Length: 288
Image (cartoon, rainbow, N blue to C red; front, side, top):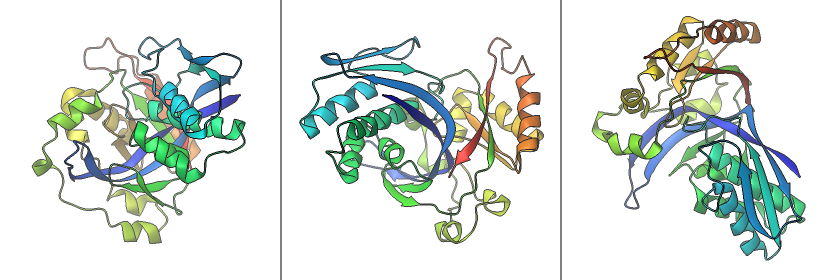
């Protein structure tokens, strides 16, 4: 069974406080983009195994995709074994949710294969135990997310804007970013979600977008601000770091502008602070 596992971007991200369990409460708007990992599920083996050629992806039970498979088999009381082949195309440590997306894709794929023994709400519940972003990837529609990112409300007015994505080839640890976050120094302006519900999310709405984690991640990886400046220089309507970084996206009014920006930025061979790391640049769209 071959399935796709999409990346996501956060069009804004506001950290509203820290919880007693160590997680942080958020207000964020998430949307998938058409950049995918490829997953193949094979059912002829016993036990749960995984193989990925990427050196930074674990090939054992610590992989979120393996955890998802075990949780599904336990909850659905079905399945004897599974082998997962994972081809990584989503950059790691980029704030694009690749691991969470892999887990959600396995949950959805297994549920479809075995004839939907679990309700959608049950899949969402399993996903939440794996990671805060997993329910969004099960939902897989543009959504406002609150709580730790698991309380989802549909965002029906988002347009499929072209996206140019820059990964500076520097992974950023989510745990490190949150550890260094000083909530007293985050932005005080708030997103008016009522406005966003009522309006098409175009240029007028972009002035409200920000990411509270961007200043912290930019200290760890200064190339984030370089990437943001480059996208704005090449006519992006807005540019912002996604998640906890380090990837930065730009939204464009049309495909021609996005293609010109992609071509220009891809040609910048020395795009890094120390001139040794080459930016990875992707052309994509919002999936609405």
